Image 1: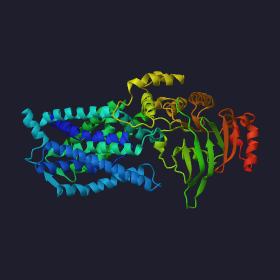
Image 2: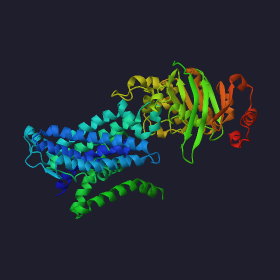
Image 3: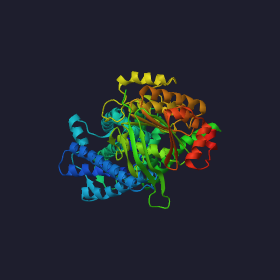
Image 4: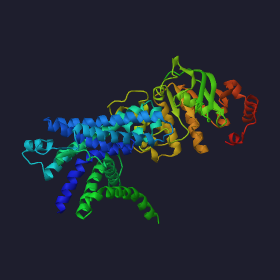
Length: 301
Length: 269
């Protein structure tokens, strides 16, 4: 039993790990709490599913799903610019939250349109996991899925490491860290922010695409609660594994994603009703957020 | 060495909250010619418009009317980040000029790219590290041995010294300093001021420095401007400035503004 729980936690943690990397990019690197992710995760799944069911290559479907997230992120970024310039009474986070909410809501409709309905089953359709099965002659279940996902995750992680330390990547980091400074060094922070939001939502949509193919269906509701699950992964990872450098923290949040799914799997085993999971997750985020403060207080007294 | 800029300011006006009950005219048609290589110190009471003047020159605030001509180019409509190619800035808050959670070398590397397109090259290329170390060593704060330290581990003085370096390493044609020593303790403030003098002297960058401190305003630069209620009420050349003391400056203010000044705070600093 321990093995099944662990296995499913690893699978889910890795599948949703790309999404957690995306949430880390927006929430921490960019200082932009981006609510688009609820919509862009489902969008990635929807676009992938419709292409696969229309007979397209699952690889093309995965790339297209990811690209749809890129577009959704760009849309959020551009809408944010519009909202930011339109009303000076907003605080810093006002336009950011509103842009995300508007995109998230709009994407719900977009996803229904893309799928011509609320759900597309992918049973007996060829997914990337099936193709990998053919190539390696191994059924893509259990630990084989974990292995494939670990390889893909490491690839994405190292590309992200490299990118965040290029000239543009440093500008992305600085946009969230001190935007005024970056502007005074001649960088158009508006453009940088839009690019980063695109990248982050592409990662989220990649998760959506893989999740849909793994579970065998895309559903319009599959993205609900993504932002909270993403935050849970980021914060649990940071608290448990530390934040000593950007390269390190990317590992931390992937670890956080796995631990979070482990906590979910264990609590389901212990009898928490699936309907209570969202509240459970929210409480988990609050606890993880409070932990460093509590720890400091305890040490002091 | 970069060419020092000439800045011609014509009838520059800035109105905050136009057409509301809170409408304030912070700059009242200010005109000024800043000669290449000028080092102007700017003083004035709170709300006199000195910070607004710098912010409007830098493009942080759009001008309501009037024009800004930098070396013959009209920059009035240019966005802030485009003007930053020519204009370096240091702010009052030592935290404002650096990215706190990034390392010293990352901050410096970003400053070297002022006004240039950023691509997929390495953010901190090896070839600039020795140059970076040299410049940091000039600060005499030991920062050259801490290239990978996060900037938020540094003291306010160290951060402001770095801000100054970052504003100037890529040799912009103009430097704007907005009370950049006001938030530091006196000893550190003096160090930063010395450093400022050295950098401006070495590069001959055209410089405008806002300060609350009349002593500093008299001691540094080749020209002194006093602002009051959105206007320039006094403009002294180097020779006139050299003969003045702080009390003289206070009297000048009374004459020029025709008001009794709540001057205590300015004198005490």
